[in-house]
Image (cartoon, rainbow, N blue to C red; front, top):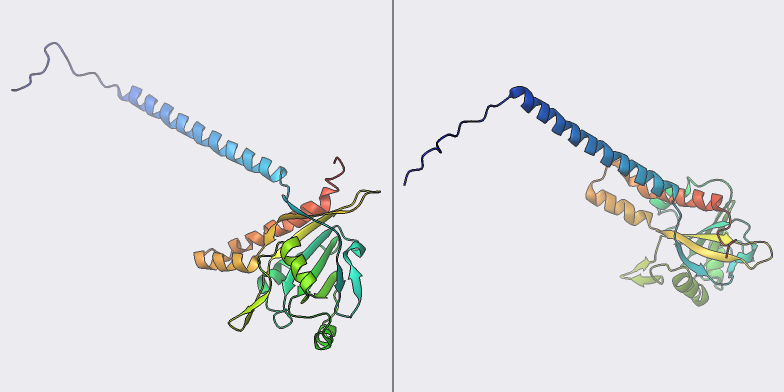
Length: 243
């Protein structure tokens, strides 16, 4: 069955000027929408940046005594700085954490205490004491012989490092992340020591960036976040004042 054009119907007149006008209106609406979305994104990003506050991961209860590389016994209650960085290494690998050292080299000169735990050095073993004594002292850095059950428990359960140091296939395995702690000590109150932000694993971040083929500039993202966390905590004051 053949269809015939309906009688009395005529093709609509096409006005090129009206079409152009409609097209311009549509393009304008699209541009306005794009600008609005972009402005909203920028405003949200700015607000997130202004609202940046490293999360409270957990509270570290009590203080701990450490034996330093020169044999001195110290207590964390003696630390004057408000921001503490705890991280682990071994005597043999102490200069092998390039990504971590790169980030630590950017730290501000004041306000931060670094505590380095040598997980293969026994504070009660004379041979290990002799090795620790050869380490060069550094301003603002405690180097601690940490191969002791009480310290292993402290690092695993208190500080939340990922694993208790152990040997596997002839290699010493331990967590090389950096834990960031903030001491809040209002006058007349006991100190409150909080683990803040996250465990910064620079080696893993660099390996993942390399695997994804990220540009060299993007590999510094974790360093930037790390320093932003440190600087915020140094400027934060005491968030427990209102508690």
